[in-house]
Length: 469
Image (cartoon, rainbow, N blue to C red; front, side, top):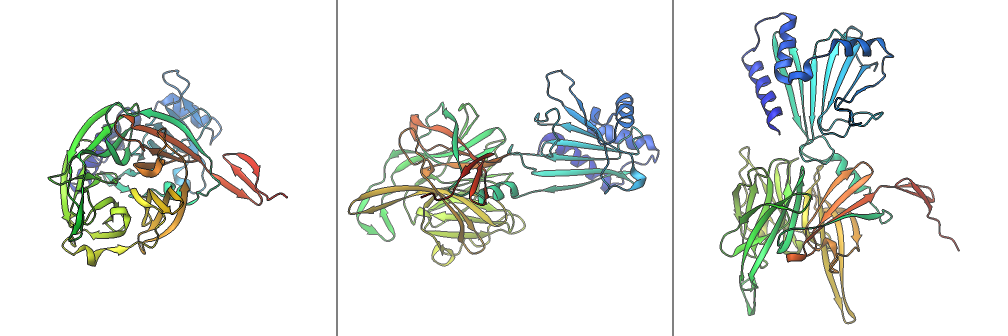
């Protein structure tokens, strides 16, 4: 939540609790909206008259700086859902993220809507939508209205991402993947692990291996190798690949960060020993301050983690995603079942298609994972990359998509970090498959595919899908 919205929510909340304004005059309502929203709540009388006297429903765009991109659009809302006593209903829409275009309808994410009942030049209600992570989807919204001498508000947050989930679930083998960017990181990425995108910034977990692990001649209990030596990192970088922050994570032998998740507030990072059936420390990191807080420790190697915000649980995948662990949280966010042994808490996966490298919670009790698996027989070996979506209510896959693309060095692109976001016509995917000085952010656009009988419509282009003999 940005500072401006936070300030407004605090103001509105205080007004409700303490019955706020005592002057019941009409101008007090307008002054209150101007206090909260500033110049946006001041309606230009000439503009009000222009919109009111023109065709109702017509959009009037305002380009204040003359750059060809409007900052606002005004109109009389003619929807029949509005009560007759509120008409004509004048609406002023302010673009807060710079994506409004002449002749196009305003969306919601990053916009402020102000409504003037009866078009008398004063604000009666306001709705602010925010896109906190820059994915084009609404993450939170606040509604402000004036009632009984006080300013009231209602606030809500979308913990999942319905558009992203819907678009991912619609993917098939027919979708076209197009590489749209290849951005070398201007720092040593070491052995990259997990990645999330929050707003304009990327966060990349990585392990710096100082001394590699060495296998025991005989297993020592469940451990098959020594602990090695290394250092865990969480890098923050911008769209040009510039390093902005390097946060060290881990302790002692636990220096291997895994796949990470961002829930809109914190980045969740598991840091484990570099060997299966070992130990993990689970952190949550504030992406703004880059301050880490240890949440709990667990006696197994957790290679990826997501925060299920629908039922307030954490879900971790072990080494090679052999098992899944579900941890419950109390009202204070404390884990209540971390004391239960991995043998009791762990659930065997119902699929062995790929070993998860990076996972994201996409709402609706579903987890998106990216990974790779090696297959070997007497004739050779094959590394297969892929995506998988699991329903966390039964830990079963609901979608599996093979990914055969390779990095500049020839590595399977799903072998290391991956994060995704929705676009207007599909999905955008980010990968950093290569390590060390070769670490490069690869960006792919995946166009939606619509099936129309024997014709596939791929990003607006039709192509025949019939089997011709």
